[in-house]
Image: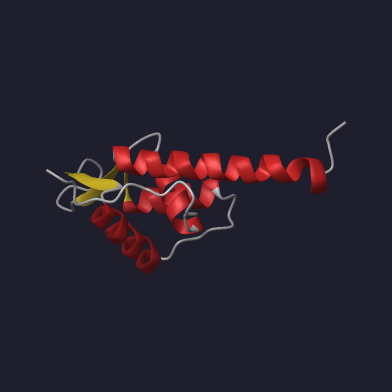
Length: 118
């Protein structure tokens, strides 16, 4: 049976939002607010997600099969369920492809435009 999810194209760049969301989910499962804070930290404050941007991106990633909603966490907020997201194998493949693509670009540029550290 053929999967409804599309394999990531290693030559297609991810958007910055998608990249940082996947990167934030790589070490552990997170709920939306934790993803927002993690993305801000990982990007050193450059990427600050609004809730609309975050949940739109999460919905698209769910539809692509790159993340999965795994549970509702009520540990710290009894009576108020939080959706928790996990990186799927397809999401890991997409993130790895992007890291390899960026590494290749940086490696090609380094001898030509970047100053070498002493």
